[in-house]
Image (cartoon, rainbow, N blue to C red):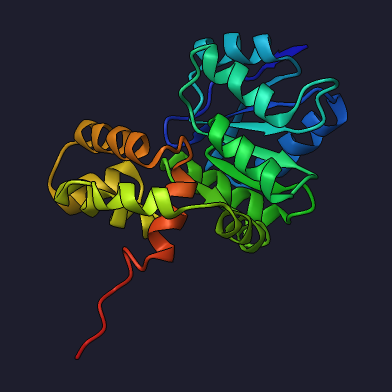
Length: 229
């Protein structure tokens, strides 16, 4: 099922909502349109429909609901990315287990929000991921960080030592939660250059997750403001 809606005004963020359940689609549409700066550009209930709708509608954010019969969240996100979607994806799920969250992020999710989150949190996170920022609900972060702490990371820290000075600066900015655009402005380089540095960082750290790299940087204290003597 695909439902296309009237073209949004230029100042609105265009939101494509993807979920296999019609009631959830309608409910998310009502919640999103509580915010005057957001407008739902389309509602779709299938992965291929989402790929086609994204190409046609050019949304600013794709909100994806969990609960796909026979498909994990990571599989759904991977199929969307493999279909050519580069738009930020905010994934909504009932499962906030750290492994579940990490798999979703590694597959290409830009944000992760529990389904029991409030309306204000949904709207705030939509705006956050629209800026290219990886955004996680506060209830997700502690368990995810604990999960990552339990994984062997000595090799990753050695690989961090192999980063160039510029890559270290980019990673420090990532650890502060900056978007690609904000990093570019902070370091006086282009967004494309930032993305190239990030690709090199992920290769050296052997991670495909922007959030995992940021958490490792935060754990080492990178990106923290220096204390006055």
